[in-house]
Length: 441
Image (cartoon, rainbow, N blue to C red; front, top):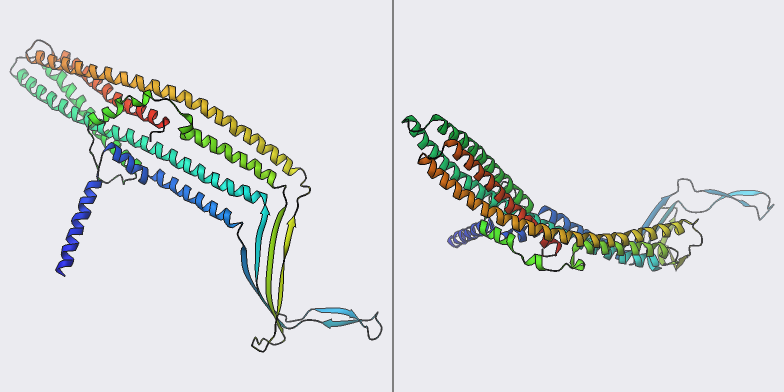
């Protein structure tokens, strides 16, 4: 019993440590976790499983189809027929009953498809359908990883913004308290204190909004990862790691390969599906050959007494069934024509997708370059705005500048800080778009 308690305690500690370990995620770990557990991924995996089932279902159509049958008949009135009176006048008809009160039949029937052109095409189509499902699954995984990367960065940036606003609020509160004390001593005007009070209230509202945005961003990240939104997780990467991920220029230097892009591969698979559809319409004109086998045992009696002394009569037959389409009212002709048009459309869509992806790649490269330059510019601006704010605060405390001047500089700093935060999110989004089109996820 003591050993059991020790084992239980060890397991509890192991599970607790494992749970805590799983509650912390780096950016890469969050993307990998989402690639296995997000709701979109789970649904896409089910589509792949359905495609596997479709292949097996189609394959089963070409395997022997075996069924058992049984029938019981009790004639309350045996059917009557009229037969000629061959012993007398043949023109006279005599009523007669043929059969027994009870008939029992049991047997086995089997059918085997020997040749059907549309069946062969159906097997190919089922495999193409699975390939399409796999491509959609892969595309879903790319989109989920990209969305998680953006959401992860949004949480880190929101937390950093909230921390900065908290620091600003504390500094403003201290400055306002000192200014209020100076006003009460008669060293500054009331307007200076009032200006700071307005600024302090605005900062408080911005801080509350930043806290709400951080909470919403965190819930969105957990939702996209497939984690209950009310659970607690910790993000282990710092703002520097997120910025490092965003400013990595390696993707911008890579050439675009459309054959590796999942959207182009989906267009190719769709074209293959249309080719098989046309092939199937043509295969419907081919003969269809089936083999069949039937074995039955029949029992006839006027008494319902099925025993060893009763005689069962066997009936066995096998054969071939050939069906050759000769004329279908031109339906197949027009069906083939429609399939040819759909194939031409699929080919045109493939070409269109190729050109569209080339354009998107150039646009994403341009967006990334712009986002990178904007981030660097906003970072420099934030450093300058912080320096200006620090100098203006010193000048205000020394009585050289007014509360209005300090408020204007503070507002400029808040605006610059907001633009810097937004530039990080824009940079990460541009980076994930470029990575996604280059098939890096």
